[in-house]
Length: 98
Length: 91
Image (cartoon, rainbow over all chains, first blue to last red; front, side):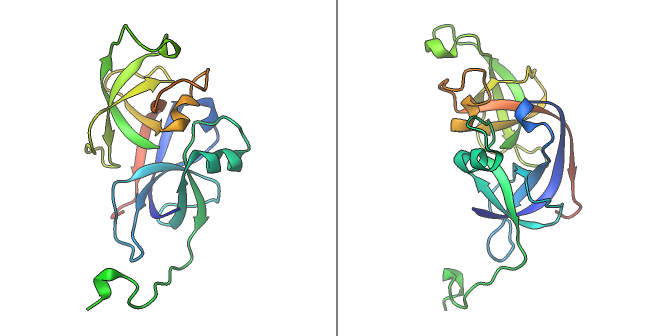
């Protein structure tokens, strides 16, 4: 799973039927300190996340199919958690080692 | 899934038989501010998108699952046409 910040919403009328009724967000991957890490992508939401939230995102189709209980589903990225806090062990990051 | 702009069409007459009947579009992946990210991909079209349109895609194994026959060898599919993107300020 990836830590990401919800930075926007996508509105789409013409879409694959499996996306109907799902909320589609723009998420920006971030590192453990909250800094942007890589390019944004899109994810559907199953935990009532909102714009600005730090979230956990899976980008893996089997997980998505399990969540939606469909054997065939053209969805890969799903927001599966809203993060309350991230704790990083002191010295755990290479950049912090003197 | 990710955003993209349809920038062209790809014609391939000789193709693997399971790919018959599908339309291939050339799509430039985009960041949330619609700036290009990476190289253009060839995607199968599941929603009748057209050139110039802002779309979203699903990649990998799940691309084929957007099609009526889910075991087609494709790795990117257009699954929606974007009406609007609302971004948070200072996001």
